[in-house]
Image (cartoon, rainbow, N blue to C red; front, side, top):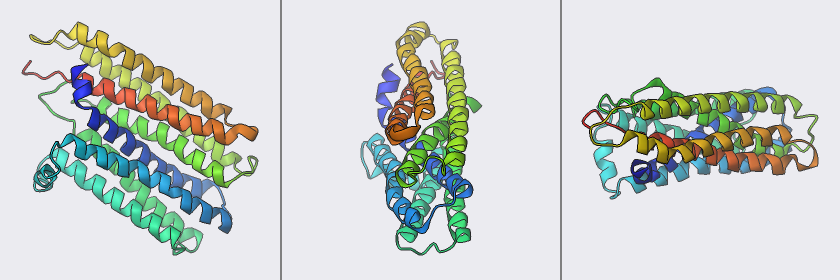
Length: 284
């Protein structure tokens, strides 16, 4: 529990950043499956600021973990030599390109379907890459409870769950005709389910790994017991987020989808707290 609380800033960073990256992935998917009118695109480009804010807030939270902002330079100086520095580099590129995309879209410079698809595809690819590097940053041999493929899979699940809910909600603000957006809704629900399944499986696997670890100093059983409420909360919020997604129909579609975004955020956040709480090193 103490480890989870001490890494609160990182939990917030990975939650906001993973969801933001997933939102840009789903924005690309939305352009693939739905034909927005010019007026709808203008509105969607304005609302895209919400997608941009998620990784921006995540970046701000990551600085909170450094204690001193000047320490950021120490991280930058080690780019290419440490997983953490590589994570920051890839994430920084993703965020910069995402902002550039948004500025170009707002300025009306993304003329034609091909240009918009190409640009959004680049941002989406960088977002996925950023999340993968985010997971690889925790491949630390001295912390076996983290050094697992489940770590990256948990973040990918968070990306799909939160990202699909966020973009689907934003698109619902633009496309009022539920029938016209049926294909987009079907794809979003599918991604929502896949993301929820991956997040749940990975989180439970990480919890089980931590609960079965051995330590000469840490009371592993007590630690797992203290983290159980977070695991239960993550599972509950994940299920509720999916339910909200399926209830997102009719006149209250936008409200239900907004609820799905908020609840998915909490599902990811508690999953990340559970992850950080399972920090048990070989040295212990």
